[in-house]
Image (cartoon, rainbow, N blue to C red; front, side, top):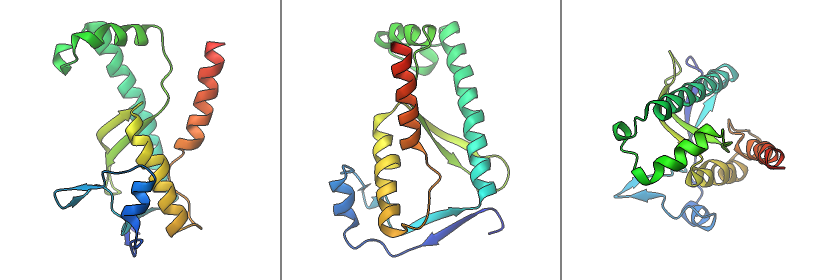
Amino acid sequence: MKSGIRLERNAPRPDWQQRVEEAGLIWHGAGGEPYWTDDQHLVFTLDAAETLENAALELHALCLEACDKIVRNGWWDRLAIPESAIGMIQTSWMTSDLSLYGRFDLAWDGTGDPKLLEYNADTPTSLLEAAVIQWQWLEQVFPENDQLNSIHEGLIDRWKQVRESTI
């Protein structure tokens, strides 16, 4: 595993479509292209996992800086943000409303720096695939393994912070 990442093939669960649909992921492919694939997975070394975690922390800080510049400079048109949302965004940012979680989609071949493709911040749909479907797959296919995903634990901690900040 020279780069710290290895793609491994595995037998798909015979009833994987039914399983993911029962868990709530009813859209798992379109036009013959899979959105969810059940027959392969990535294996990371500890160093690779730490590289991704550190990149996520740095990217999150950069995204917060970008948000601050957008709000302070009123760059709404540049991002096609509808006028109806501007007041809510400004209020949320200026009062430092707490966010719950974020999920990065990164491109990385194990060399150089990971590249940001997409950031899903406080987007409920990503919770289903990343916190439920992936965990269910892991428990059913490789129960002895772990995953680079702490959404469940992070949400528990974050909800405690939200509760404490509103008391």
